[in-house]
Amino acid sequence: MFRKLVFLTALSFSLSAHSMDMSIPPAHAAAPADAIQLSDVPKRGALYRVHHEGKTSYLFGTIHVGKQDFFPLEPEVTEALAKSSALVLELDVRASAAYHRALARHGQYPAGQTLRDHLSPDALARLEVALEKVKLPLRSVEHYRPWVVANILVGQEIEKSGFHRGLGVEGYLLSKASKKPLLELENADYQLGLFSAMDDAQQEAYLLENIDEINNGAALRKSAGLIDAWSAADAARIAALTHELTTGDTVSARFMDRTLLGKRNPEMAASIEAIMRKGDAFIGIGLLHLVGDNGVPALLRQHGYEVEKVY
Image 1 (spheres, rainbow, N blue to C red):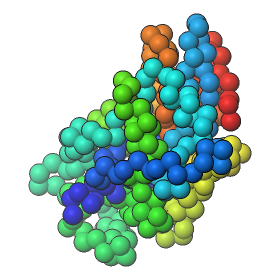
Image 2: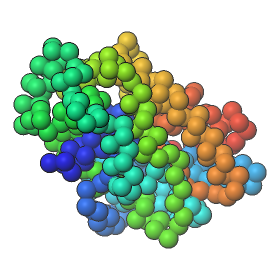
Image 3: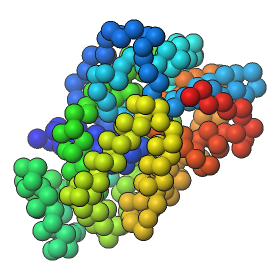
Image 4: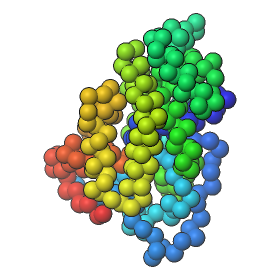
């Protein structure tokens, strides 16, 4: 049960958080076979070419779950990866030990404390109803903090829709670049620490907002919509969903706007600049980090980098 919960938590960070990548995949899934003719492969995600001081790198927007028919990726992506000297990801999705340590530190209560000690009676009752719908007993999650439980519940919705962590884009990129150096922009402790920085009231609101969105279908609509937009390289829809996810007077929207994107995008851009000062790279980061005036491509342009959208 614990491993199942960890998987669902990791899965939902990608889509209920829509950009996080703190996952441990289940057992390594085999990379999808290149059965599709390359000439028939559709464009997916978003790809940028970045030039600076004679060096050329690539930025590619990823999603952290997928389906078999998402692969192989578009030839321009695989060719850009092949000619790059290094692969850069938010973090190494294979590093399960680091994830477990970070989850224990940021996502679990100290011994002797449970959700029952931190949630209001109304929130606890609503959580029990939500857990009953997915056949999870409260005792199996009560040692987790509310933000973890919220992401577990959303992860259940994503998994039921047929999207699998073992078919995430990062795994495919790793399989195609197995002989290249892998560089990480972040680590699991940092990423999970962003969630644990919410106080008890914010975490309860985050949990209840996600339960409401599961009940009214918005959670699945947003997650599936983002995946569909990625799979068609639909820039307009990606931008519209980003606006929806970051707008509104909710803890979830403010957290997405100010923390998951607003805080991390400048940090990612700075790390990418440091990497590019040393050489070229193929950089795969969550799709929403590439969107808008405060996205990583825009920030690199502001710092004098030549950034060209390939598609």
